[in-house]
Amino acid sequence: MSFAREASRAIRSTLVIWIIVAVIYPLAMMAVGQIVFPYQANGSLIKDNRGQVLGSALIGQPFTSDRYFNSRPSTTSYSTADPNKDDAQVLQTGVSGASNLAPSNSALLDRIKGNNDPDPSKRVEGDLTRLKTAGVQPTADLIYTSGSSLDPHITPNAAQAQINRIAQARGLQAQELETLIAQNTDGRFLGLFGEPGVNVLKLNLALDRLRSAN
Image (cartoon, rainbow, N blue to C red; front, side, top):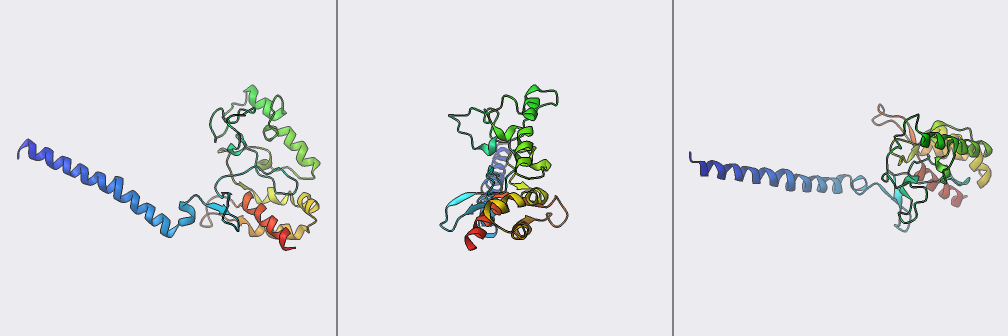
């Protein structure tokens, strides 16, 4: 068999494989995603009654008001910083991810003590004082940031710890909020993997709907 024929066969095989794995397969997966899992395939977007996008169920948002369940602190303020006015330098190393500061790093010590940091979400002692003043028993996920800094969930315990503050701010019964938390708690994946969590954006949207219904 000649070299030219062997080379021609190799080129044709490469083109066929490329078309299958680089064109047909991705398009097929996109089609399956859009047909079977359209919500997940399009970013798990949460919309209001008018169809306006409010956020994604996969990406956290900052909530600090006493009228809402507060979200977990973020090293990047959930990527809400304005690139043209980034005084806190939250976008200096990207829009997601942990700080990766060593225990001996002065910047981490400053965060723990709340020194020289204009961003209140990065002050551990400041968060402790704020939560205790509001009558909230601090939990780890209300004080410390997550590995991605975009975590949309808090633990059920963190949500329950905020019940009295929100009930007082909104004039609601604690039992109403306990029921709301239970209804918006995601269980373990397949009942086995991970831990239960509460999506803060979904919970706060449900909280607004509860207020409107009363």
